[in-house]
Amino acid sequence: MKLKFAKSLSDKIIIAILILIVFTYFLFVILPIVAIFLRIEPSQVNAQLHNAAIIEAIKLSLFTAGTATLIAVVLAVPTAYFMATRNFHGKTIIDTLIDLPIVLPPAVAGVALLYAFAPKGLLGPVFNKLGYVLPGSTIAVIIAETFVASPFLLRSAKTGFENMDRDVINSAKMLTDSRLRIFFTVTLPLSIRAIISGAMMTWARALGEFGATLMFAGNLPGVTQTMPLAIYVFLYSDPLAGVMLSIILIAIAFAVLITVKLLEQKRFGNKK
Image (cartoon, rainbow, N blue to C red; front, side, top):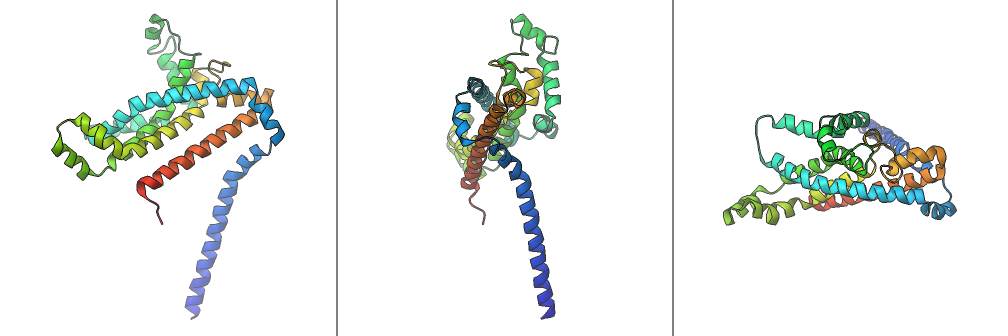
């Protein structure tokens, strides 16, 4: 009886400590976010939403992030399919190199893009001959966002392709020899939720990209000043505008994450 009571007491203490740790971590994450919302009065929201500088930054961000996501779909989804369905020498190294932008410090990503695409960079002379100077342009923003965010789509799509029911794919191969037809009629539908989740994460990451964009594209209003860059400027010149943009980005991030989680639940089923 004493042993059972001691075990029960020990379990309760462990659970209490665990709850305390969880609660502490929850507060650590939530309090800074709540602090942002408390910095602006509800009566000030409408005025800030009509701020021309805020609207301009939002429009530019939506355009560049959307374009970067479309480019990522074109490039990352076929790459993910190839990496998921083929084995070859050096695959692990290539897979790791493709993932590298996820963990690269933003400053390093910006420097890498400069040395690759600046006028005196690796590919800069080629663009110069075509009449393009990429740094300081909206195209540079799109390149920076695609470079940093596209691996999120690649990872998600690759996981989706790897987790497909192979029996279904093999059955489809018995009905047709067209690899392209199998991809569009069987493979793509089976992995579409993973691709959509990855595309949404890519879009959200592109929308929040700051460091690489600042170093490679600059911070020019109406040209390269996306929402994160505008926040950086507004915190010194117009703090309320910076807070408003921060709240918008938080709301977008929450909406994307909750949608991705719901898609994952439908894909794998609820874990109880």
